[in-house]
Length: 131
Image (cartoon, rainbow, N blue to C red; front, top):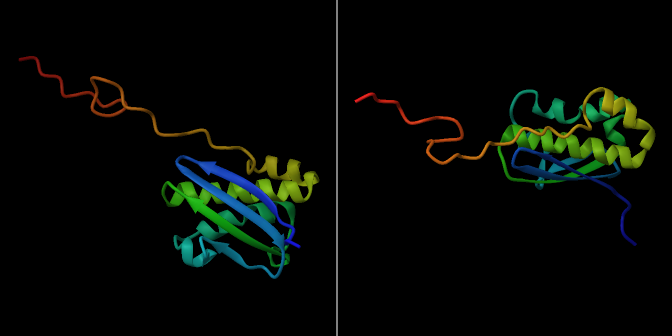
């Protein structure tokens, strides 16, 4: 018999996070490392845990395992947060309104703009010379 878990997928920029929440003792594993070991920047761990605060849950009741790929630190952090919020909604759909109020269920649509022909990057044009 397999352990019952709730899964949420979060995406941001080029990052994708698969978050699994199950009842447990409060372990938070990201890519087989502890949360604070993987996200070392100041405030990143607190940002990721905001969905627990929003629904008034004690984090020590649940084990969370995350598989996150692609992108940079900020993209991965926000992808994990969105995935965690979506997993919590699967646990209890009544939490949707409190998570939505804090903007935790909204996918950030901003992505890198494509390069255009004749330009150096998406918008940067070559230097104009008169002669």
